[in-house]
Image 1: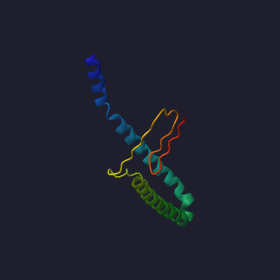
Image 2: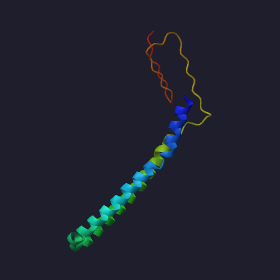
Image 3: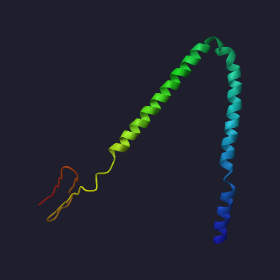
Image 4: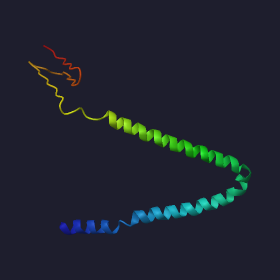
Length: 115
């Protein structure tokens, strides 16, 4: 049994190069293909080069602004979810049979019970 686990771990350890190699291959092929496409499109896009750069600039600025807003919004979410200070405590006492009730702990405590 330990031989099987050792063989599986050994195989997985030796296969760690596979995923980075595939990613590098895809990136290389993508680079070559994008260069070929850019060369073919150069003649078509040449009259509109100013518009292409303007759209590129607008897209870049929009991306940066959205990323900054998202980062700040994420910080606000994290600040809002900070736990209550440890010195606060909540005591709940329930008497008799409480079945099918909901207890809400916070500023207001509500206990629905049938008596």
